[in-house]
Amino acid sequence: QVQVVESGGGSVEAGGSLRLSCAASGSIFSIDAMGWYRQAPGKQRELVATITSRGSTNYADSVKGRFAISRDNVKNTVYLQMNSLNAEDTSVYYCCVYSRGMPYWGKGTLVTVSS
Image (cartoon, rainbow, N blue to C red; front, side, top):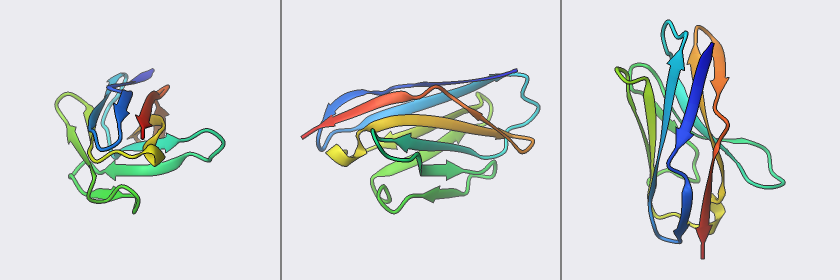
């Protein structure tokens, strides 16, 4: 069994920053890609950023230049540094870890940005 746990969400004023963390544990043989997704009320879940095991990154256009994804392969942890936050970034942020082709999702962490 694989556990994926996010942390670091909270409330911040527009223009502020937050750093999300996601740790994977349990029966993980190897971790491939890791990623962050978000879902705002009444909207579909969308990709925020992904990072491969080799460190290649991909970002949604809406967060390019403001967010940065990174990972620690020893700790099986992925991070999302979020800067210049705005109200449109308010969402539940979910971490997804891919291992042997299977996605494992966390329960999400809420980020609220007040304008």
